[in-house]
Image 1: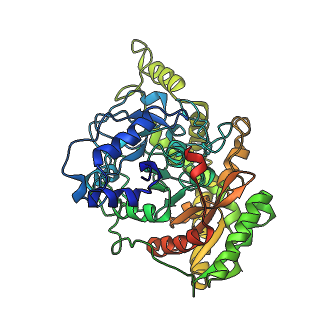
Image 2: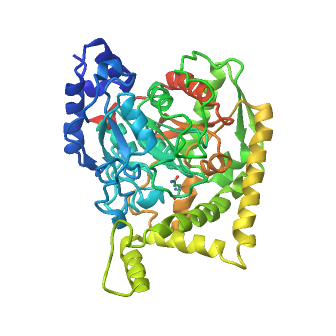
Image 3: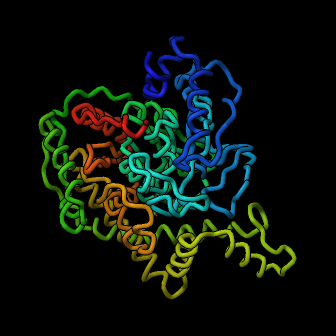
Length: 475
Ligand code: GLN
């Protein structure tokens, strides 16, 4: 008999629907693994699936779901990886989590993450680093590192995370799984503890492309509680493509040339995947994204600016940590924030406050917004000639724990290839393209807004041609 954890989520859902697998048995198999794990991927694990109708009648078949800590879940700790929210149990559930539960994916647990989703290695979590299941001396990527490590290690069949500048795609790449950042507005942000509201998007982290499509299908849609969410055009299609005939892939020199500092093993895997794409019938040509090299600078002004405003609410009054309630109000605020936030969050608040301050606003925030518009225009022009843009997901494979913590700029560089798509609000997916020195490499594809069904289709054809085997990480 095939071990339950060797099944993809879609296979497990089908098994429950046909009666070959018991939903309770499936939940228990993962619950036991999640409760006994040693990667620090989970911050909380459920005892049992929440009561509801019969899983066999639901599209997601009772397959349990790991959820990044920053999604509010009613009565369950939702701390965004921060000590300032330690033990916070919200009175309501994020829309995407509620939708997935209703579709038949019960909450398995809450996953570790960088504090308030600020980071690329999970080392900024207030609850300790997460270990990469491929090599426990290395980071899983971030900020959705707990979700990525859990799926890669077979502690969860699938997971959701959020991506503001790369936080789904980069950890998916470093852990050898699939991660999809949807079009901005495709999924409701209601109940997601905010980092940078004009960039944050929820999305799936899964073992394969089919699982990503299945989960994403049940996440999308307009939500009256989030005025930036929109109705997804049509139903998300499950991928079927066998070849890539007629698909035009553009490879931007700006993100793949020497400026990107791409590791040689990552470059080799990227080029091998482009060759596979050509073999499947795609055309592969260079393309231009002239402003993309400035994306990182613009992002590190815009995202901290929005974060500085969003994080003003943690004041020790309404929820979360409160230090020295007897002191005068201003002293209580500052003591609470000094104790509750970690160093990276403080750095972002200072950067963002500075970028927004009068006298500097135009020079920093205003200029960054103009660069953002230029980057969107670059993509619009590129998509007149190409169907999708291909880059490596991350310039590097998983790096050693502690190796970049003293150098914020080196850490920020992780997002060199993922941030441009975030600024433009367009969808992008990372799929495993192979191994370099025993560590997974991610292949990154971006498409025009709301092209997710086609993007997943192309990723699926490539996935089959690549034939990546992630079993090692599940042992
Ligand atoms: N690593 C990036 C940052 O630290 C992106 C994080 C994210 O997408 N949430 O801001």
